[in-house]
Length: 196
Image (cartoon, rainbow, N blue to C red; front, side, top):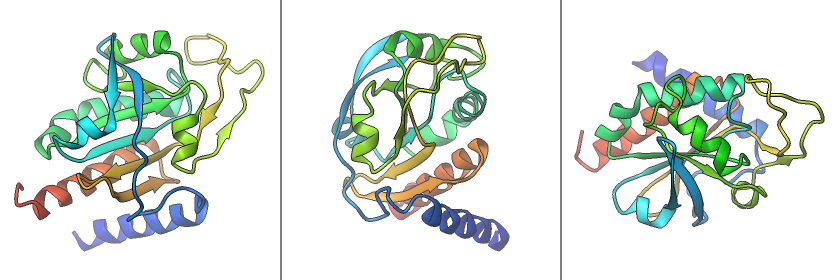
């Protein structure tokens, strides 16, 4: 248990050096509303509404149907019940179009109908969280062979507590470790609320 906590502390401190421009733990999380998709069906996601039910894991990722993002979405889907047990909502955010996200959210290999993903086509929400948004890379293709014509935000996860404050910022780690660290934070929040 001590080793796990040490790994978490090291991973988070490494990330603090890598992305010091991002919002930090204790900062107010910018409210946002975005078009999103769950199981291939579009809906409107609003952070304030989701926070009424529990903490929200907002994970920014570069692009749907790319290697690391596929792994991260799949891992969130596999761990879905554990996040739900901690009363946490998970929402992925990228610059992908809603049409692409309809496919990604329904794909049984990735979001598997369990993990909603939201479209931030101009990177406005990503920038509001202090993230770097890069221009599209010419001729870059996803794992389906489709050209990626949009920009990308750096892979960073913010765990937002019910008081709208950022409880943790996670980045600079592998996609699977990113999910594991987010789960650790929401489970700690649940224990603090006396729910776990």
